[in-house]
Image (tube, rainbow, N blue to C red; front, side, top):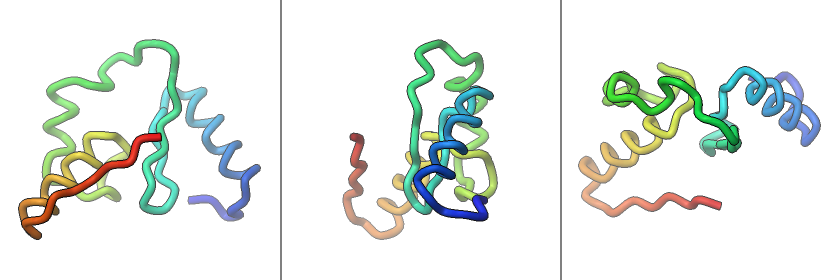
Length: 87
């Protein structure tokens, strides 16, 4: 949770998280991912996938698995296709 929302504070937060191999960050409802240019152990394991299954975004640290699970649950409950924008 940032106390001041500005480009500088967001970039500083992303830099600090990146330095600690925390490549995923939420900014509001948007999931930001910074390419680590290296392999991060245990980032994409079956255990990690199971940990995020059925959880809400605020229950665990930001991760693409949480985004995918949330969209899947919304698709099932609302019966509507979902879309992810990757840029």
